[in-house]
Length: 144
Image (cartoon, rainbow, N blue to C red):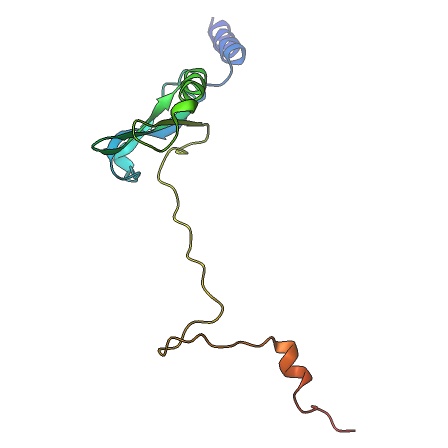
């Protein structure tokens, strides 16, 4: 009897596939696209919500951000349906879909590009010469 129960259970799992669940950020915020704290992380509905969705709405009172779980089909339909309204201007609606865990979360800040020659206190940049120029014009290292 146990063997029959285990065989039935394994058959159901193999037939339906392993349950897949994704985690997404879920929140509504105004003026900042953050939702970075763990309290906004939710487990999406297994085998139903397989996508993270992000919405940006530009309204008269500011920019509104909405993040949630979604089914891939519904998200793709919504994002393509609102594509013509994604202008960045007043009443703009932009919807994005992504399928990796927490992909609708805060964007990583890019590192600032450091200049090769920092400006001295006087304000004029320092002139840095390539090492090859310095070697060509320097005194020979070996005497023959």
